[in-house]
Amino acid sequence: MTFSSTTPGRVARLKGDVLDRMLRSVPDDASDDRDRFSEKTGVLKLRCMAAEKTFTGETQKSVIAMFWRERHQLSLKWSEVIASTGCGKDIDSVFGKGVWMAWFDRVGHGKYRLRLT
Image 1 (tube, rainbow, N blue to C red):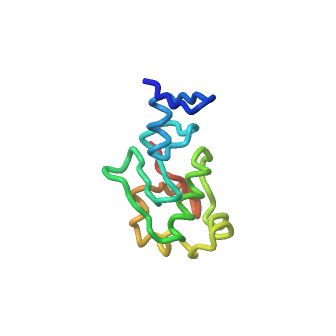
Image 2 (tube, rainbow, N blue to C red; image 1 turned 90 degrees about the vertical axis):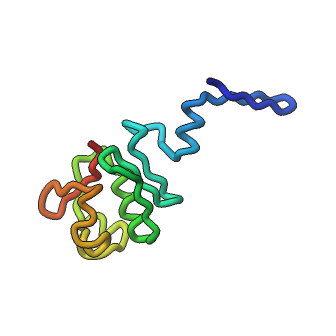
């Protein structure tokens, strides 16, 4: 499906799948559009999660945003996350003891990644 809009002297066309991705804030480089995060709203949805999670705190949103931007890396060191976001000393202090395990994997001592599978 293609959507068209015309104004005097201009024609704009947008494919339906592109419009859908834009409205859901799914970046074009997303490996699967079932995984998504919106920095603006703080909504995270991963395939491993039954329902989407909305982060309202600015610290939590900035941490999730960092992991989302770096989601193709094997892992991030928590010390890098602290340096970049100014968050708490460990992942439990940011998200709550063990709560984060719903959307993060611990890869090694002080290393984490988003659970994308």
